Image 1 (tube, rainbow, N blue to C red):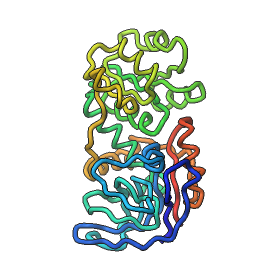
Image 2 (spheres, rainbow, N blue to C red):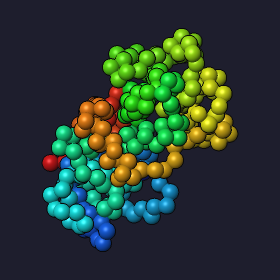
Image 3 (tube, rainbow, N blue to C red):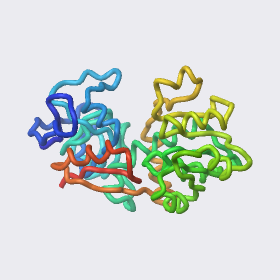
Length: 298
């Protein structure tokens, strides 16, 4: 099979399309012929030398931890269209995962959406489960125009919460479309947030770190209602939360159903052919832009 892989750690330039042996499904598994796979900072970290805990990785290494495609071996009927998740190895023509790590793809969901849907949506869902923004409360989302932020804004609105979202100037109208009150990053951030939420902030989902987290600590005294997605090294000392593990097919199915009903929107910023994976990784590492980047496989 063709796979996006690397044989040494480094920047996006180490990514190559290699011919690797096809994997095959064993007991309790499915093999999926991949149609699309998401790209995210997690994958760039793996490419740069980070190893997900508990995994014994071999060479060459194939990044990618979310995908969508068609089952062709294993515990589900061949031809079943699914989306799912894994730790690595999704950026390839075939991926094998436990049958419990996939869920049927709704017919209403395009392949490019399905390929990048899992990670950001489930991360946002888990984070909001921990923060528990309630009806009438105000949630502050830093990095609200990104994949996780976009999902969090919408899921919080479905809970009945009010949302204030921080993002760059170019993304302010996008946040309004999602239902958030937008605030621009930069000097004077705290004052703009206070003006946007005169009744105060009840909880914070931090997808930006740095000044955004510092400001959040001033605005919300209850540290168990602040969750950072990026400042893991500071979280314990500050007493704030980090997202726990909790991805599941059941959670993913619920989120996919919301998309199918039209209750969630999902923006694919750009879809790259898998042969252009290095360019996709370069774009994800800029840290700018709304929506999701995906790789497509013919």
